[in-house]
Length: 482
Image (cartoon, rainbow, N blue to C red):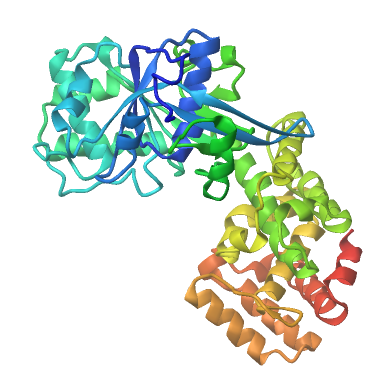
């Protein structure tokens, strides 16, 4: 038995109020799930028309299942491991603009349409000067959207109340601003009337966002057991964690049209999203990055076992609460609660998050995620954050490429790997040699964007920690910072 509206007896049809570019796992486990909850609990009364942004995708599978699919949410919630599943009934249909272009353009004529969501990967919000208005369709996502908006502008004679609310979910900074900028560039490239650009500016709203939910996706390894449990075949099962956070920078009135709070969703409409983006990057991503070299060299392999470990767990908690949070400009209660949730997510028993899988480009990750905390800590406290400094020393040891007798498969830019190889090949393990290695690495402006040797006491502190790690091993060396 296959999942579709004939077999799902609770199937409901809603007005098509949302246009969505992207049919992948994340949007279905995040935005479409939220719309499903708002339909059931907040009277949103709207469905999603999904547009496949590239020629090959999943809309045929979506249509085969009448837009239905099963979402499994697995993870920690208030300290308890919880797994639950539900059928999501918020997608009305899927459209492939490469084979259904007329149907795609006709979406613009729908008077009920109000929202546009997208997740076309970080490379999706991009300008392609080769795109033309007459293309069927345009290659880029913003090109496709501009053509559709222009059709709406003409069909409704530029009525101001027929503008749309754009809420992109791509993981780039200021995604809404970037999307609007590119749409206006296409309006100019295609020589569209000035009234259209005015309509884009005055009748449409572009929101920048921050999205946060871990979505492992289709459970290939366990789909047989899942099918047996469900009692029906679902080719679009998606797995996500319980935690979700949606920060939307835009006017407060949107909340009345998108009643997420009434459905108990963790959606925040804010005037400025920068502090929340900083919070996520510093606490979630920053703690990940500072954890990896320390925990891996200690002999652990996953995030969950690291956080649960007596020594490494204390190290990462102290790093977050005593060194990262103290540098952030948000209410301490809010930051502490977010940190608690992050640590719960790290301990998700349903997800095996390997340290090596998040070690890619650790140098540049430290620069964007941890270095700002280190520098701000020095500025505020006039001293070095000893755990973040220890993590930096452990990172240099990690790039030596060995854990005992085991070879570490390093993954980074060729220049970075060559830098470390050259420095470690020349190092004889003496304090003088290690100090020279540290000085050279800290001076590598290509990654750090500055000479870190200029930070008072940093060269000495990193050298001291690295010497300890080399001489007595990380298990003894870490005791000094704990």
